[in-house]
Image (cartoon, rainbow, N blue to C red):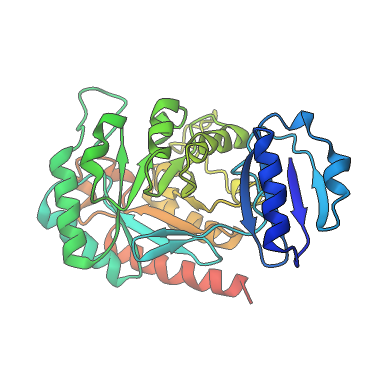
Length: 334
């Protein structure tokens, strides 16, 4: 249930209402927007008398919510959420560029790429330390050492870093990581999601291979229900019958999810296609449909990359994508 309050509601009246609701074992999420205050009520709201609440002269409207996700629901939080990632921000109309190699391979590699993508406009550095691979014989990442190298790149460039976690037991290793990524394979690892909800770092939540919008939002809800509301959604392609591309990029997810949730959503054209020649046009499409950011795999030597070389682009290509995507976003906001 949501309760919309009039703009001039006094703090005393608001406190009286919230105290009464808490006495009914109702949890309250308050969102102060530009034109109204929204109270999101979570709990056994079926026992609450809507007419009684509506009769209060400072209440504008009361609505029951049918969707199973509450904290992630735009009805609870009408204004777009902006997530701070170190010195960078995701959401609020800007196009945030996140770039870096699929996998950290050496200090020289990650520091060099970090400097190049920053010069092109990236404000967050990505890089895999723990790599979930389909084959147990494939390169699994440098693990703890990879995170240490990401931290060196952060010190050298000032870029905040995002990298993927595989298990809640790894959380101590992420002490100096600015944003924790949950990969598609772990989107419904609910114990991991709850653990991430009990810490404060922003979480980049990738959509599963065959997950619906509601399933993605319910995974976000697991994180937010534990107290961490700093969640960024990522569309990275879903599995279809087509075999030409690695996955099928669902650009419709951006405008669709923006009607359902206040959380930012970014696009990963690298994993969505698996083909570097498709990354540029799909990045432009993502900018045009209103994505809050792009996360792109950039490697200085893709042909010899230890992981996902065919979907990695060179820094000079990223520079072109960064300039044109930013221009497209600017044109769309005129």
